[in-house]
Each structure stands twice: as structure tokens, then as C-alpha cells.
Amino acid sequence: MDRFVVKRPAEDPGGDGKKPRLEDEEEAGGLSRPSVPSQEIRAQGLSLEYRLLFSRAEADAIYQQLEKEVEYFEGKGRMFGKWHQIPRKQVTYGDPELTYTYSGVTFSPKPWIPVLNHIRDRLVLETGHAFNFVVINRYKDGEDHIGEHRDDEKELVPRSPIASVTFGACRDFVFRHCDSRGKNATRHIKPIRLQLEHGSLLMMKYPTNVYWYHSLPIRRRVLAPRINLTFRKMMPVGNK
Ligand SMILES: O=C(O)CCC(=O)C(=O)O
Figure 1 (cartoon, protein in one colour):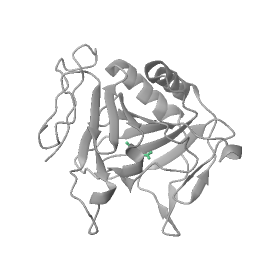
Figure 2: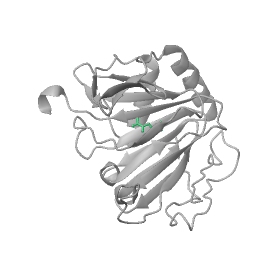
Figure 3: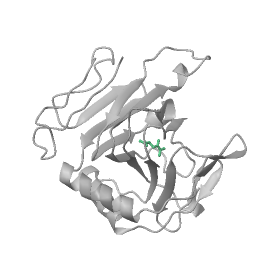
Figure 4: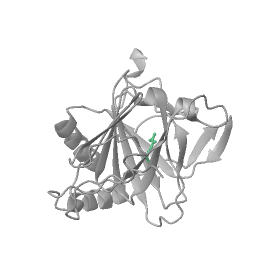
């Protein structure tokens, strides 16, 4: 199995004292640098950066706050022209003039709350990017999931990165190249599998979302909840 396993760096107070590790590195194409806390992951048309953003103690506190303060939308989404219960809870927060269309539904964001401002401020400090919108997905356990998709909504600022911050259960996260999907695959490019840890940041940089689909598959052995926040740069309605 080609799988990245990234451990908490030694200097992180929440870590286990081991350096980041990559399992089956060769099979995955040797795409990362396992001995440094921040990992660059590259493949054809894919550019990712993974690191631990918050210490264990900070991540625990933020997780509790998110559980208390985030209010999710009704769990329905539109797929193939019909309304379905989506297998997770979802909500968007952001600047008031923005909207976001996903699976045929246009969402207006809720106004920012302090815990989200806190994460957003840390992202500005650490990445230099000012995000104006966030999509939050809550997975109650390993049954909850998100199917393969690209974040290529028309409202996104062209070529802007997406910052994916995770709290709670560690889950597998899979990238699949657009030419290597399903029965009509024209090329055999190996999928890239990451494990996104509590307090981690995955930067998805241009052109990743042009060529690669991502998903959070079902993992029945996972019993704990997970909250993921994808911070984005969106264009105000008038500029679309
Ligand atoms: O839960 C995740 O890690 C990913 C969420 C996601 O793919 C999205 O918000 O588009």
C-alpha cells in the first residue's frame, strides 16, 4: 500500500518524540522529505505542503471550542439533481459579501466567530495568506466521509491555495489523478494517501485542484469525530 504516515515532529510539545515518517516511501514515488517537520509532497500537477500547525494542547482546546461554537447547516446536499442526506455535517463561515456553490447549492456564509478568527490569524502568520471563507466538515466517525471531488468552484480566486486544517480523529485522505479514475482511466498514476493528524495543516497549492481529485474514504475502525476546515480565498459576487 502506498501510504504516507507523518508523525508529530520532535520539537512539538504534543508529539511522540519521533521525526516525521513515511511508510512505503518508494512506492509512493519518494515524494516527501520525511526528516523535516514540514513536508512538501509533489507529483505531476500536484503541490502539497503538510505540517503540524498547533501543539497537542492548542489543538485539544480548539477542538473543544469548535464542538461548542460551530453551528452546522442541515445535512442535505444536491447530487444528480436530487436532495440527499450528506454523510457528514457541513457549514460555511466567511466575509458577508461572499457565496459558495457546492453540489448545486449556493451557501451564504455565517459571520466569523472567535475560534475561527484564531485559526485564520495563525494561518496568516504561518503561510502569509489571508483567507476570507471557510468550509467546515464534521465527520462523526469513520462512517462519515466525503467522495472524490476537486475544489474548483468558480468563486475561488484563480490559482489561490486552499488551507485544510484538521482536528480530532486522524483519517486517511486520498488524492487521485484525473486521468487515473475509474474504468475510463487513460493513465496509471498511483494515488497519494496521507494521514491528516489532529492540529495539522495541509496546503493544497495550484495546480493540485486542476488535476487531482481528493476524498476522505470510509474507515469503519475510526470511532472518534473529526472536524476539517478548508480555508479559501473567494471572490466577492460582483467580481465573478
Ligand atoms: O475533510 C477533509 O479533509 C476534506 C474536506 C474537503 O474535501 C472539502 O471541504 O472540499
